[in-house]
Length: 520
Image (cartoon, rainbow, N blue to C red; front, side, top):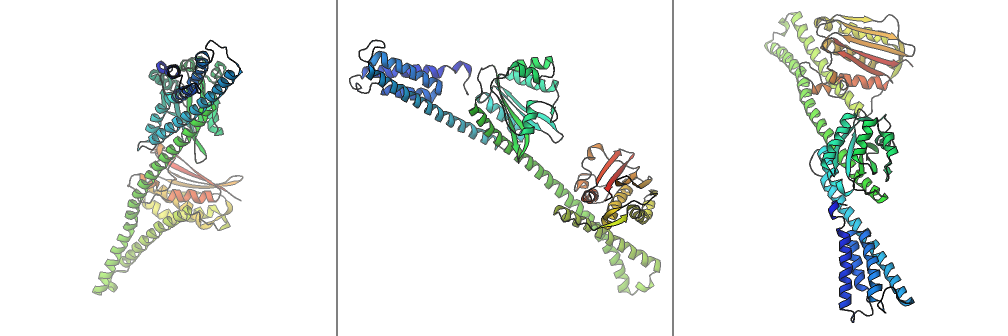
């Protein structure tokens, strides 16, 4: 299938020449080959089938049969022979067809293996997966299709056309223009590609009708585009990685007039399996590299955050130690000694909180986050937290208020609920820019609702989808302290209780975190 149209008749020319040479040599050596006059024709059939496939092999079989009858039978005039000659030629024709079929099948299998090996080597190159897939579709054309496209399913459900190849390069621009004019597909649309993605099974249509094109066209102009591309035969094969469809490979026969066969489908599915593995490995590698980068950034921040309270605590202890060595510790004013001890205690508490966060992440990752459920009033928990942080909020210039007009009772883990409210309140104080902060607790018919609102920095829209991820703080500026674990831990605790947390934000106008918890 790799040949261009001008050379498609060359194998048949080889078949004719092979039979002619076999006839010539047999005629010259007839006295020596009197008993086996057809043996050289077997060689001609074998050569024709090996070089050109089944069609040229069968052509050589027919020519050899006619030539053997006409020139080599006795008496030597057209088609006048007895039962013995008829049986000889019948056996010859059968053996010749068998040789042609087996030789063609073996040659085709060898060619397919070479094609898969070449595709495998291409997919293993150290290039980004988009470039590899682009080279792959150009390898496919014209061997397995007149044009080939790759569509990849993205995380948002949009199907992106990643690569296009056509035997006529100008048609590649036409295919791309088609995708630009008619926006990317989504999984909820009705289309052959989406059907394949949903089912995970290949679509095989060796004879595409104009009725089917009209059924898939979105309008008259779209149908004209499809007709210009010349759909005659089509295979749509899913790219499946880890039992999940991630895209499709589409193979189309057009102007060449060729048709796909079940054998082509089997080859296309094997190619798709290798391509999907390469794409999935590339994605995993990219994710691993991104995770390593986030980890390294997090470790850098964590070392700084953990070192800060230790440094401050060490300074306080060194000051107390100097006074003790001088014997002047008892001479320190009581208020100064209290301040030193309170500062040291605050640094220890800060350090303890950082370590607790790291331990919580470890428990969550290992699936060992345990809850001790009891009946409690979420409004009381919020009141305790607000009272505990009122002074800190005031120091930051924010007025911290609580709106909880009635008890909101449910079965939750007391310590974990305290942790949730604490994380949300401290986050609001940190990013509240000295603006008012409101905490609201209220019941709904089936849930408890907790909302914490600030009027500070707000969250950029591009961060709204990642704000609850682990180490998200590692990817942001370091103008505020913290490990970037508070919101991640908060979401995990809420989900462990069967609840959900959402955030709405306007940049420069603050954010609102809303928690919904089942009460039973």
